[in-house]
Length: 167
View 1: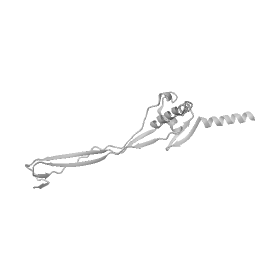
View 2 (view 1 turned 90 degrees about the vertical axis):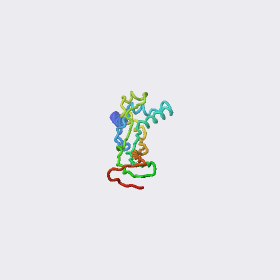
View 3 (view 1 turned 60 degrees about the horizontal axis):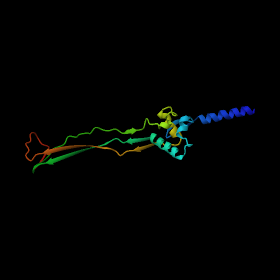
View 4 (view 1 turned 120 degrees about the horizontal axis):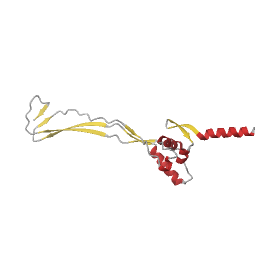
């Protein structure tokens, strides 16, 4: 009876220690208490090493989001002399730039790489399971500007019907 209780306790403890299924930032993660987890969260080397590991983890689970670029078209008329003619500018659409999400895909610190089997996913899971929060920073919206410059000389010979003439 006593042996059966000890065996049951050890089996239950092993199940709890080996893996914990959790959801972090909407992502299902198995938090295995394996060598990678222990290498990332080790504290026996002191608080400075632990802080360095957590900083490396924070970098590994941080993403940069760049919003889609805003576009602007500017029409400029340059007049030479005293005659001004407005030339209607053709609309130029700059090539759109889509939103981009950039996340690290490599970069395990060398003192933890072998314990994580050189697997970046295992490393980032161990980071998240050790309490590091994944973050996404958002960059400023880039602007693409197309400038159309029309130079009009002082003496103009017009062929065809102009859009507008101001004398």
